[in-house]
Image 1 (spheres, helix red, strand yellow):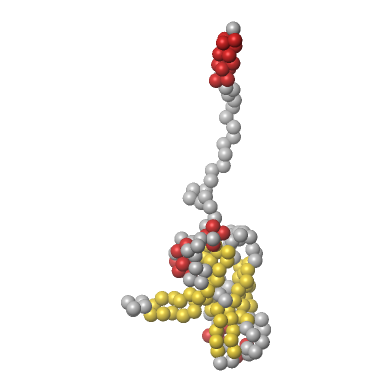
Image 2: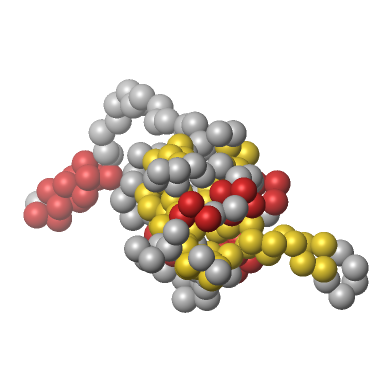
Length: 178
């Protein structure tokens, strides 16, 4: 009798309950299973008295507290050995040594926006900044999610290293008009 009860209990356990199908879940975005890096470019003019320019992030973009924002200035064009001309990008802050004093292109950022500015020691006479120093200065911002920023191969001072780690190329650059 004990064996029959045991067999009936096992049979009831295998005959599980069935009900109506639950509601369908939401589909994820194909290929977008994690945060991705973002790059954008803007060209600005600095003006006295504060030599500061606000920069808005691209539309439909959200910066997280753990993201890292890097900024680079188009410093010069250089000729390569094979005769091509390439852009030279330098990480900010970038110090310039001049006859009238040193000054720096610099930036700061929040989760809402960024700011580009020129600063320097009190001994710098900013009235002597040239048009070339303040007008048509091109900057690129790269926003890295924390998983990219923690990669030990990342060199935050090397624009090409940042682009490679973030898996970005020139077609990914968003142009921001000022």
